[in-house]
Image 1 (cartoon, rainbow, N blue to C red):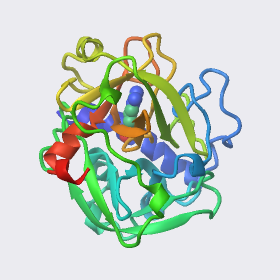
Image 2: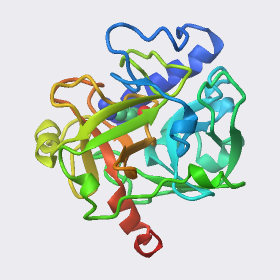
Image 3: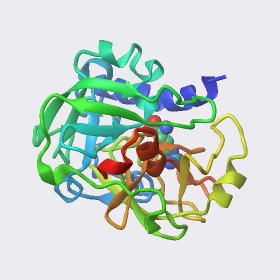
Length: 281
Ligand code: ARG
């Protein structure tokens, strides 16, 4: 029953791994004309302009051509990084995260072909035990880093009731994911501007199906009503930011940038609550 979701997710990752050996992915600048995206429908951005956006990497599992990047993640503390639970699941990694010897977070690197920024080993991975791979509810994990990130790399999280969660709020998603939905993984970081969408829209789009079930208490709906701007495979675990605060983690969707199929994000206020971080923020 996990299959449909897992397969939809795993295929692009396999493509990414294959691309590391056979250079079939075109270079980053050649973003196809179809949708010039992140993230679909996006634009290039420097890591320095979103220092909290970090790449999750394992060259051992995904090859070295793109620094081993396979998911996004976001720094919420100098040694604390959030990502999606499904990013560090066995279905993606092929083993428990503790057995991936070179699991790292890469910070400050715009172009994955470069050596800029920092690579910091993940010392500990905590996966939300309540993550449900069928609905995709609770799709978050906490990584503890072996070394500190720079202070300016940390982004604040929006707590429950923050106006940044309101429908229609402008939001930006960041990542190194597929820019077309056809397995075109860029080398350089991208961002896409969109809006927080109403829960009703995602409830209608995702009442329960092979891709997942929208649950407003733990998920957040974002994109554009007409489609076009969205996160995509490889962006998972990365940040959705509104009014300067973290509101979502890239989690799932049906295709990428399709009208009527918005992106679904892990609701950060629920993460804060589940982790008992209310007082800390
Ligand atoms: N599950 C995907 C990943 O692992 C993210 C998909 C997001 N899809 C979307 N249409 N917003 O990278």
